[in-house]
Every structure is written in C-alpha cells, then in structure tokens.
Length: 350
Image (cartoon, rainbow, N blue to C red):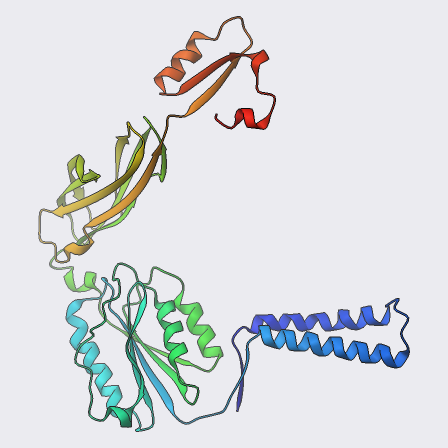
C-alpha cells in the first residue's frame, strides 16, 4: 500500500495547527475546560481533513502489474524517417512486457492524442503497432501535456512506466517539472532520443520562419515595423514576401546565415480601420526540405485615428503644435485652457 499526494504543497496548511491551539487557549469564549478541549479537537480534525483533501490524498495498493505507455513525438521538428526506428523500438518493448502488463501509446505535438489506450498484453495477443495514425497539430511541442495525459491513463491496479520518445525540442510548458512531479508520485519516466528534422536535413538545407511580430492594436494612419525572424541551416539567399489580407505589400530578396538570427524589419503603414491578417512567406533559392514551416501569420486590429485634446493658455494655439498634430494624422480638438473638461468622462475620448 502506498500513500500519494497529487498536490503536496497543500500540506503547508498543517502549519496552522499551532496557531489553532494558541487561539483556542487564549479564546475569550466562556467554555468549560472539557468543552474547550472538545472544540479544539474538532477544529484540528477539520483542518487536517481540509489539508489532506486539498493535497489530493490517495491510497494505492501495491501492484506488480506495469502500465507501459509510449509517448511519441510527432511534431514538425522530428525527422519523418525516424518513424521506422520508433515503431521498432515500441514493438521490441511490447515483446518484453509480461502478459498481465498494460501497453499504451500516446502521440503528441502541440497537444497529445491517444493512439492506443492502455490494454493488457494478453488481450492484445500478437498485435504490434505498424504506424502512428494520430495527427495532432505539429507546429508546437508540449511534452508536459503528453506526460499528464499518459499518467492519467495509468490504471489504478498498475504502476506507471512512461517511455518518452522525442527530440526534446519543447516550446510549451516544462517537461522537466512535470516529470519530477510524476516521479514523486511513483510514476517512472524514461527517455529515448530521436533525430530532429534539422539534424537530418542540415546537409540538404532547411529554412523556417520562427516568428512574425505585428502590433496587435494599431491606429488608423499609423506607421509601424513588422518583424520577421527566420532560421536557416546554411548560408543562402531567399525571397521574403509579406501579405496583408492576401495582397502582397512587400517583397524582397534576403540573405540568410546559418550562424545567428536572421531578423528583418519591414516598415508598414495602415490607412483604414478594420481587422487585418499579415502573412510572411519565405522561399529559398537553394533546396528546402520541409516547406510547411515557411509561412507564419499574425493579426492586427486597426482602430480610428487617435484623438487629441490640445488646451492652450495663449490667445491662440501654437502654429507649430497644430502642424505637428496634423502631420501625425491626429484628430485634434483645440480648446482654450478655460474649457478643460471638469470630469473624468470628459477625457475618455482622448
């Protein structure tokens, strides 16, 4: 039998027990000594039960059965030709499993998907995995989410043994923190490394748009800088195009370097209100193996022109300030200083 806590940090509430004893002894309530002790015991029991409930107390009976779950990384960074190696590795482990052991498979990218729910090997018979059929979104890698799902799939009568097969290139959450929590709860986590797309394609060349930065909120007539970050495994020239609502607004030839970041700033301006989709596309002059990562989108909401309240104390407004406001595409409201709004609501439009 094993006692587990899903949230052991909640046990810090037990530190309140001395405070409860202190306040009970110094209470002004007019209770007899016997009733005071009974009241204190009840309060301590309630505090203990609350702490254990929040800590997720769970008593599990020990079992020799094992739930062997394979977590397979199918994100875009994993080389496609490593699939055969992964399937062979899983089938070899299934062969070694005992007849009463559970076997399961989880595929993951941005989110996890159950490829095979935990099933006893004796039920599977001669079944072997032939391919990974699940197709979760591949643009991100969330190993921590896959670990949580796999741990939740472990049957109550078995000990969890998770085998993580991944290149380790996570970009959501923290797998290390999640694995540490699982080990503390008695679930074993093992890892097997596989090659990345970059490693396999380095000789053939690979480019990818890592990031497209556009201000999410803009004002009508505002100028801004659009930022594109591109990764490349070799020094090469490429064509970079920027679309706004499917219309090309910028196109240029850029030089990409294998060492360091390739960051390009493209000045833009929006002349009307509305919702706009910006898309960056890069096309290498040399070979590019994986073209699905050559595009990235971002969105921007363009609101009306900024409205400015200009209060002047002189007999007339300053011609220089009026000129600057006009050149900046501001809608200016010019008033003498005596006409300043007298409430917060009077300033809300500026």
